[in-house]
Image (cartoon, rainbow, N blue to C red; front, side, top):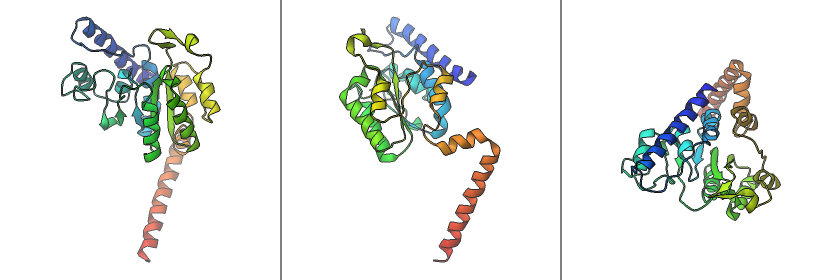
Length: 244
């Protein structure tokens, strides 16, 4: 839990300082702060980094970028509009990226990161996490993308960072349904939870790979078995190939 707090603390302090820089007019374009949401990305990155997932972030993505290992200096430079920024000074606050950490930025169209993430996951079959807000989740192409991912059984995690607002319009004004109910109807295992790290972890069981999760849970003996079988299979392949 301390490591999760360490990530969350970096995110919160970054956003606090960014807000001061906005007030001082050192940042002169629209900036989307994620203070208050940092425990979501911090928890997910802590529990899922071992899978080296591809990350598709929403426009309010500073905490996601930082929690998954994006460089602080590069994000600062991006917010200052410098060419040394994480998007070469062209992305601003909303379209940040870090290819070294498989973090792909938002293009500005509401919710478009969801079909893009699903398409990428379908092409690569690599573990993928896509973040969206509760308003982005209402876009029709988000629904069809989730349905496609379920049909193809893709290794993708959809994360709705629900702050109850679309600009200043509350969810109760916009709709009478919750996203987890819709996703469940599309055949996706879904949860409606708080941003408590323990609660998040409970919902992540076997999210990408039951085999690796069981190996971690059962301890050193399973790692020995894994390594023994890895060597055995490799040696048998080499032996059979020599006969050709």
